[in-house]
Image (cartoon, rainbow, N blue to C red; front, top):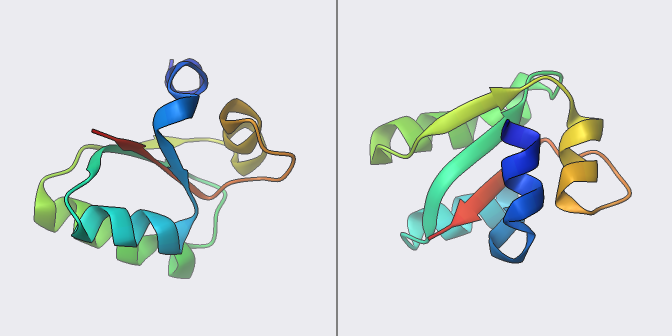
Length: 83
């Protein structure tokens, strides 16, 4: 379900760690998807901030599939959905 949700919301997504952190701090994020095969040192800061801010955070199994669902040619470790 998560990949389909990302595909449906392509016009409201933020891709990548830095952009996601910025959007979270600005209060623009409603949900986050993190790839399980991404390196933890990359994703941990986002996961911690999501927990602190009470933003739902779902884990998906593949960076490649997450990137494809977002419409990019490369894998995506983190995708955020804007409010």
